[in-house]
Amino acid sequence: MSTNVDIYFAKAKRWRGESARLRAILLECGLEEALKWGKPCYSSGGKNIAIIQKMNDFVALMFFDGALMKDPKGLLQSQGENTHAARRLTFTSEAEVDKLSKAVRDFVRQAVAAHEAGVKVPKRDTPLVLVEELEQRLAADLELKTAFEALTPGRQREYNLHIGGAKQAKTRESRIDACAPKILAKKGFRDA
Image (cartoon, rainbow, N blue to C red; front, top):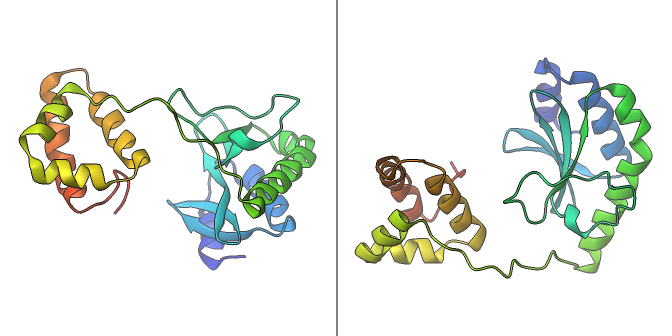
Protein backbone atom coordinates (compact mmCIF):
# COMPACT_ATOMS: atom_id res chain seq x y z
CA MET A 1 0.00 0.00 0.00
CA SER A 2 1.18 3.50 -0.83
CA THR A 3 1.35 6.26 1.77
CA ASN A 4 0.23 8.83 -0.82
CA VAL A 5 -2.76 6.68 -1.67
CA ASP A 6 -3.52 6.23 2.05
CA ILE A 7 -3.71 10.02 2.34
CA TYR A 8 -5.93 10.19 -0.77
CA PHE A 9 -8.40 7.72 0.76
CA ALA A 10 -8.28 9.38 4.19
CA LYS A 11 -9.28 12.73 2.64
CA ALA A 12 -12.02 11.24 0.45
CA LYS A 13 -15.51 12.58 0.99
CA ARG A 14 -17.44 10.97 -1.86
CA TRP A 15 -17.46 7.29 -2.74
CA ARG A 16 -15.19 6.46 0.19
CA GLY A 17 -16.61 3.01 0.96
CA GLU A 18 -16.89 1.97 -2.68
CA SER A 19 -13.32 3.08 -3.40
CA ALA A 20 -11.97 1.32 -0.31
CA ARG A 21 -13.63 -1.94 -1.39
CA LEU A 22 -12.21 -1.62 -4.91
CA ARG A 23 -8.78 -0.88 -3.44
CA ALA A 24 -8.90 -4.02 -1.31
CA ILE A 25 -9.82 -6.19 -4.30
CA LEU A 26 -7.04 -4.73 -6.47
CA LEU A 27 -4.43 -5.18 -3.77
CA GLU A 28 -5.62 -8.76 -3.15
CA CYS A 29 -4.98 -9.37 -6.86
CA GLY A 30 -1.32 -8.48 -6.27
CA LEU A 31 -1.30 -5.15 -8.09
CA GLU A 32 1.08 -2.36 -7.12
CA GLU A 33 -0.49 0.91 -6.00
CA ALA A 34 0.55 4.51 -6.68
CA LEU A 35 -1.04 7.92 -7.06
CA LYS A 36 -1.00 8.92 -10.74
CA TRP A 37 -2.89 11.81 -12.30
CA GLY A 38 -4.13 12.51 -8.77
CA LYS A 39 -5.95 9.16 -8.60
CA PRO A 40 -5.20 5.69 -7.19
CA CYS A 41 -3.62 3.72 -10.03
CA TYR A 42 -2.84 -0.01 -9.99
CA SER A 43 -0.12 -1.68 -12.04
CA SER A 44 1.64 -4.96 -12.64
CA GLY A 45 5.26 -5.18 -13.72
CA GLY A 46 5.33 -1.45 -14.39
CA LYS A 47 2.26 -1.58 -16.67
CA ASN A 48 -0.83 0.42 -15.66
CA ILE A 49 -3.75 -1.96 -15.28
CA ALA A 50 -6.57 0.06 -13.67
CA ILE A 51 -7.36 3.38 -12.04
CA ILE A 52 -10.13 4.44 -9.65
CA GLN A 53 -12.01 7.50 -10.93
CA LYS A 54 -14.48 9.37 -8.74
CA MET A 55 -17.22 11.08 -10.72
CA ASN A 56 -20.24 13.01 -9.48
CA ASP A 57 -22.76 10.24 -10.12
CA PHE A 58 -20.58 7.16 -9.67
CA VAL A 59 -17.13 5.80 -8.98
CA ALA A 60 -15.45 3.98 -11.84
CA LEU A 61 -12.75 1.37 -12.13
CA MET A 62 -11.16 2.06 -15.50
CA PHE A 63 -9.04 -0.61 -17.18
CA PHE A 64 -6.45 0.98 -19.46
CA ASP A 65 -6.61 -1.86 -22.02
CA GLY A 66 -10.18 -2.93 -21.34
CA ALA A 67 -10.89 -3.36 -25.05
CA LEU A 68 -8.80 -6.54 -24.91
CA MET A 69 -10.97 -8.22 -22.30
CA LYS A 70 -13.58 -10.86 -22.75
CA ASP A 71 -16.79 -9.45 -21.30
CA PRO A 72 -19.66 -11.85 -22.05
CA LYS A 73 -22.02 -10.06 -19.64
CA GLY A 74 -21.33 -6.64 -21.19
CA LEU A 75 -20.27 -5.05 -17.91
CA LEU A 76 -17.49 -2.87 -19.29
CA GLN A 77 -18.39 0.51 -20.78
CA SER A 78 -16.52 2.83 -23.10
CA GLN A 79 -15.75 6.21 -21.57
CA GLY A 80 -16.86 8.06 -24.68
CA GLU A 81 -16.76 8.27 -28.45
CA ASN A 82 -13.07 9.23 -28.48
CA THR A 83 -11.97 6.38 -26.22
CA HIS A 84 -10.14 3.59 -27.99
CA ALA A 85 -8.66 1.12 -25.49
CA ALA A 86 -10.02 2.01 -22.05
CA ARG A 87 -13.16 0.44 -20.59
CA ARG A 88 -14.69 0.93 -17.17
CA LEU A 89 -17.01 -0.52 -14.60
CA THR A 90 -19.20 1.96 -12.72
CA PHE A 91 -20.52 1.67 -9.17
CA THR A 92 -23.02 3.66 -7.12
CA SER A 93 -22.96 1.60 -3.92
CA GLU A 94 -20.75 -0.68 -1.87
CA ALA A 95 -23.25 -3.48 -2.56
CA GLU A 96 -22.58 -3.12 -6.31
CA VAL A 97 -18.83 -3.41 -5.70
CA ASP A 98 -19.41 -6.56 -3.66
CA LYS A 99 -21.75 -7.99 -6.30
CA LEU A 100 -19.18 -7.42 -9.09
CA SER A 101 -16.06 -8.32 -7.09
CA LYS A 102 -15.65 -11.64 -8.92
CA ALA A 103 -15.89 -9.84 -12.29
CA VAL A 104 -13.33 -7.24 -11.14
CA ARG A 105 -10.91 -10.02 -10.20
CA ASP A 106 -11.46 -11.71 -13.55
CA PHE A 107 -10.84 -8.47 -15.47
CA VAL A 108 -7.65 -7.87 -13.47
CA ARG A 109 -6.45 -11.41 -14.28
CA GLN A 110 -7.19 -10.86 -17.96
CA ALA A 111 -5.39 -7.50 -18.00
CA VAL A 112 -2.29 -8.87 -16.26
CA ALA A 113 -2.22 -11.92 -18.55
CA ALA A 114 -2.51 -9.71 -21.64
CA HIS A 115 0.36 -7.55 -20.40
CA GLU A 116 2.54 -10.55 -19.63
CA ALA A 117 1.81 -12.03 -23.06
CA GLY A 118 2.64 -8.72 -24.75
CA VAL A 119 -0.85 -8.35 -26.23
CA LYS A 120 -1.66 -4.79 -27.24
CA VAL A 121 -4.83 -3.02 -28.31
CA PRO A 122 -4.61 -2.60 -32.11
CA LYS A 123 -3.84 0.93 -33.26
CA ARG A 124 -6.63 3.02 -34.69
CA ASP A 125 -6.80 2.76 -38.42
CA THR A 126 -8.49 6.14 -38.86
CA PRO A 127 -6.08 8.97 -39.59
CA LEU A 128 -6.19 12.07 -37.42
CA VAL A 129 -8.04 14.91 -39.15
CA LEU A 130 -6.79 18.15 -37.67
CA VAL A 131 -9.05 21.04 -36.79
CA GLU A 132 -8.78 23.67 -39.54
CA GLU A 133 -7.24 26.33 -37.28
CA LEU A 134 -4.62 23.92 -35.96
CA GLU A 135 -3.79 22.73 -39.46
CA GLN A 136 -3.34 26.34 -40.61
CA ARG A 137 -1.16 27.23 -37.61
CA LEU A 138 1.08 24.20 -38.13
CA ALA A 139 1.47 25.08 -41.82
CA ALA A 140 2.53 28.61 -40.86
CA ASP A 141 4.83 27.67 -37.96
CA LEU A 142 7.45 25.04 -38.87
CA GLU A 143 8.85 24.82 -35.32
CA LEU A 144 5.39 24.16 -33.88
CA LYS A 145 4.64 21.65 -36.67
CA THR A 146 7.87 19.74 -36.00
CA ALA A 147 7.16 19.63 -32.25
CA PHE A 148 3.53 18.56 -32.83
CA GLU A 149 4.56 15.77 -35.20
CA ALA A 150 7.10 14.53 -32.64
CA LEU A 151 4.31 13.95 -30.10
CA THR A 152 2.74 10.51 -29.75
CA PRO A 153 -0.45 9.97 -31.76
CA GLY A 154 -2.47 9.99 -28.53
CA ARG A 155 -1.07 13.36 -27.49
CA GLN A 156 -1.72 14.77 -30.95
CA ARG A 157 -5.29 13.51 -30.78
CA GLU A 158 -5.80 14.99 -27.30
CA TYR A 159 -4.64 18.45 -28.40
CA ASN A 160 -6.82 18.22 -31.51
CA LEU A 161 -9.86 17.24 -29.42
CA HIS A 162 -9.27 20.05 -26.93
CA ILE A 163 -8.82 22.67 -29.61
CA GLY A 164 -11.68 21.35 -31.74
CA GLY A 165 -13.99 21.27 -28.73
CA ALA A 166 -14.39 25.05 -28.92
CA LYS A 167 -17.43 26.25 -30.87
CA GLN A 168 -15.96 29.50 -32.14
CA ALA A 169 -12.91 29.90 -34.36
CA LYS A 170 -11.58 32.67 -32.10
CA THR A 171 -11.67 30.33 -29.11
CA ARG A 172 -9.98 27.55 -31.09
CA GLU A 173 -7.20 29.98 -32.03
CA SER A 174 -6.76 31.10 -28.41
CA ARG A 175 -6.57 27.45 -27.35
CA ILE A 176 -3.80 26.89 -29.88
CA ASP A 177 -1.96 29.91 -28.43
CA ALA A 178 -2.34 28.48 -24.93
CA CYS A 179 -1.21 24.98 -25.96
CA ALA A 180 1.74 26.01 -28.14
CA PRO A 181 4.29 26.32 -25.27
CA LYS A 182 3.49 22.79 -24.06
CA ILE A 183 3.66 21.38 -27.57
CA LEU A 184 7.03 23.06 -28.11
CA ALA A 185 8.18 21.59 -24.78
CA LYS A 186 7.17 18.13 -26.12
CA LYS A 187 4.54 17.71 -23.41
CA GLY A 188 1.07 16.28 -23.64
CA PHE A 189 -2.02 18.37 -22.94
CA ARG A 190 -2.37 17.01 -19.38
CA ASP A 191 1.36 16.91 -18.57
CA ALA A 192 2.66 19.30 -15.91
